[in-house]
Image (cartoon, rainbow, N blue to C red; front, side, top):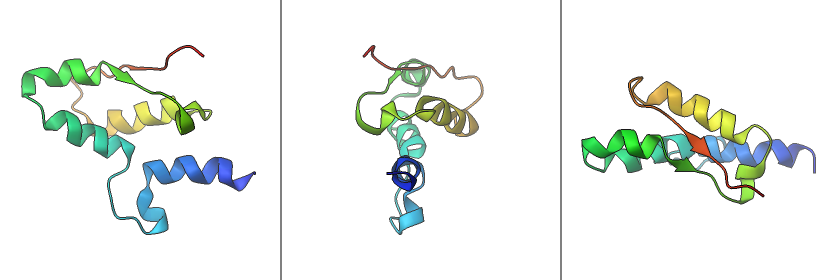
Length: 85
């Protein structure tokens, strides 16, 4: 398993790479938060929790934060946490 370690997490960010034309994880988070009342947006973006599976891959949290920062309004804080192992 060499290429798979990179390919599987990448698909979660860009499903279109394998012909699945749906939003990736960052876009899905934004869509979910945007469905809530505007007053809740800062609290939701500052309380993102990653659990299990591919979220344990090296650099996953940092990549998600970077991609979210690019699409979330700058005045909203982004805080991503992972439970201790």
